[in-house]
Image (cartoon, rainbow, N blue to C red; front, top):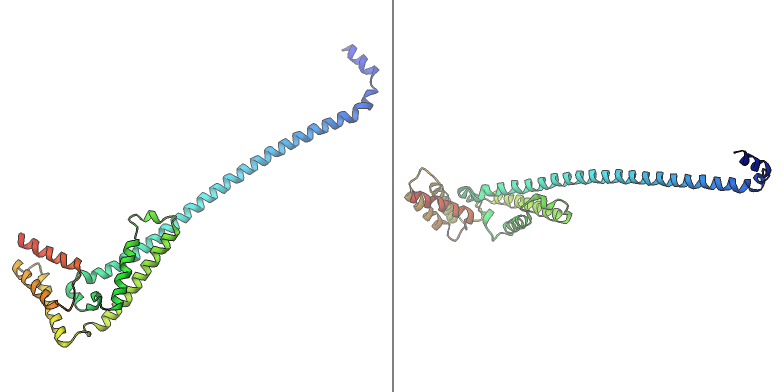
Length: 230
């Protein structure tokens, strides 16, 4: 230690020669350390910003999916409600004869209604979840359902306005008889033979006037056949 102090005492003047260089080196080291600290702080800040952005994007995605599901549910509900209104005619043959235009495919409005229904049914997804995230399919299905509902409204309004006015007096009489016979054919209290006979006569009255919907016709025939077999 004494030797070191002796050496420093002899060469103290070197401090003035190399002092600036040593100071610059120390300042350089401090600046480098500060830059490294700043870079670490910037990387941390960027990571935190990325985490926040990802969390916000995820939350927005969930909110967007929920909104889409609500919209899809509304479209499907409109589809179901329009179907239910149509089934009110299709499954009640006696009522249908009050408004025969609903199944008269000679009428452009009726053709348009049935065409719109087929398109909406075709575009309806088996699983509503399949439409989530598929904006193009959502819009296509939504527009098809709206077109179906509007076409049904227009056709129904015209059918109610006309009722049976598009038929001659003799044809209207046949429609009335067919209504009476169909009500008997759908009457569960009637005997199987009465129902079967009434249905056959009703079909004869309607021959050349109206084609009964296939779904309702098949269901009524199934009921009659089931009663006969029982």
